[in-house]
Length: 245
Image (cartoon, rainbow, N blue to C red; front, side, top):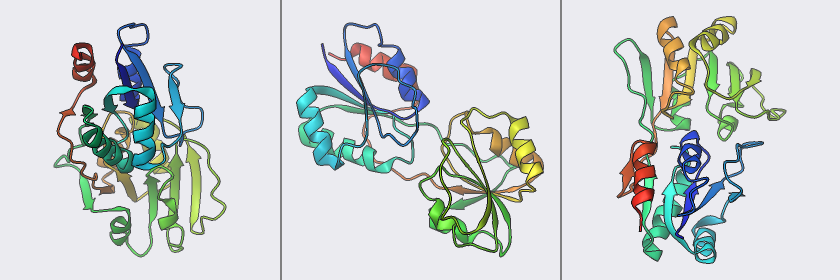
């Protein structure tokens, strides 16, 4: 029975694992980074927490006798993706990578392409009311922008005691509707949105709402991860695992 490690943290990773819950042909292990409180657990074979870099990942793969790695992590979880690819090469263990397709700009969109989180700040005017839809990892970069007002949304409730700029904080997990996002933007008089190009459907509604309201969206460019075996839908990954060995 091959041991398959799915690096998760996304709805797609759960969808892949769900296909193999009652499948006796494979032993599926899901790894979650542990950044989300009360994550959805698909299988009892779920580990939560970081590996401790590529060395820790290599030790885990040795201990669990992993024969296939499936990287279905978030598009911006670059460290684990790089570690997984490097480890697979060193150990000569196959890896397949799920690549969630990026959102594409419409002629009706008012997008600014930012190279990084730091670069995104350069495109804000001197004063703004900005919707930060970035997750919780990079909020400190905006903390000292005291001439700006921010609407901050994260999946889990977090403490923002040290965030110095004026702000309102909300939390919630997608999928969001266009009506949800329209109301949020109108009620908070939002004129700018800063977001990652995460792709997928769960949070795309804010892009459609911004388009309708003609708001400017600063889109942080997705980091490039070089992988040799990419898949762009979960169905093809499930088929690959079914055919494995």
